[in-house]
Amino acid sequence: MTRHPLGEAHTRELLRLSGLAPPARLLDMGAGDGDTVRLLRALSFEAVGVDLKGGEGVEYGDLLRLEYPGGSFDAAIAQCSFFLSGDVDGAFREAHRLIRPGGALLWSDVSFTDAAARARRAGFAVEYEGD
Figure 1 (tube, helix red, strand yellow):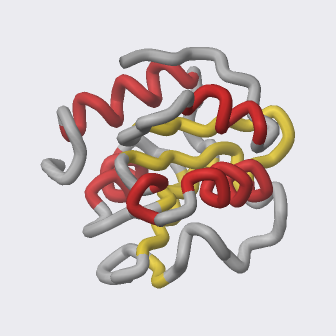
Figure 2 (figure 1 turned 180 degrees about the vertical axis):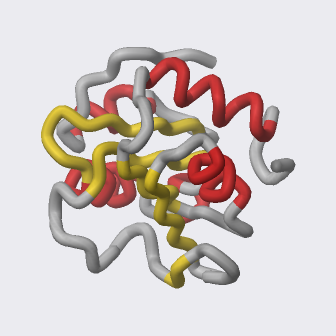
């Protein structure tokens, strides 16, 4: 897991901070080659990954416009993908649509503006913010 800073340790820290436990259903938005999806499944989460490249264990999909019904997931994880989407606010809105009420977004990314404010505008309550 080398495609985002600190790799697996970072993903595990996001999970720890979230308090999520298996068998929660998670969506990996911008799953790349599927490393995080494989880790989540190994930890007994139900995990679905989407990425523009698709691939083994990862569905093809544009994280800005996914075809899942609203509230389909307990949580979403997005590591270094919202910025690359070209529409950070749109990515936050789509994540909010897909996560059930009371669910969580585990997000880390490059941000040159107030990321917490962007998350709040999309409807999220920010429980942890770090740099």
